[in-house]
Image (cartoon, rainbow, N blue to C red; front, top):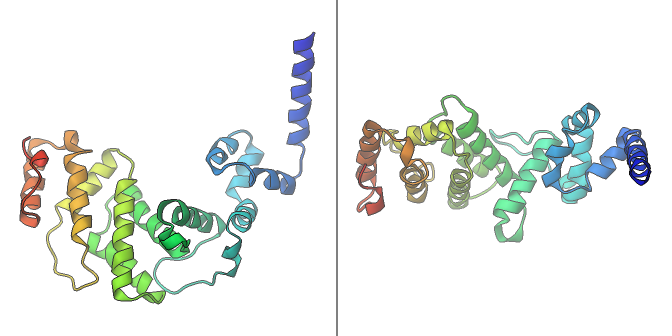
Length: 236
């Protein structure tokens, strides 16, 4: 009897919660930890629709990042996007970068832009194009060439560290490693730290994906760029 009573109570609570209007559901959801949002969106079609809509993300943006309402649209090639995109960019800025304890939305947007280009594009654009787009974005927003180059390098390194380990990422990294050297003036040239990171990931995280021909092609390019190279990279 007790179990039946508990089940009836649970069902009643679930039914009552399910009957809440959308605007109250949104107020509840934006108070739940972000890590649980994906799971919540899978519970009901109504909830999934809310997480796909602008209203929930606008409310989440204003609650989590209240200063976002004062941000103006910026010039440059990387757009600001709607509330969901802005929330993701600010979340990245806060939890991955937090440069000098400040949350810079454009840093998050450039991170998302680069990560999507490397993870989702069938054939990513040349690294010079991607890097140049990021540099142009920071300069368009009023940053100096030195700051633009520093921020772009930090974004490259963060993205490379957070790429999913799958076949597509391996092919993207191999593509970056085997690109021919093209002279680009400062600040449009990638830093040596970024170039090193590409080879380091190939020779460590993706070493088993390299066949013999790939290995020697990548190794030859590494030797052409760096001297000396780590002994851990040697030996197929």
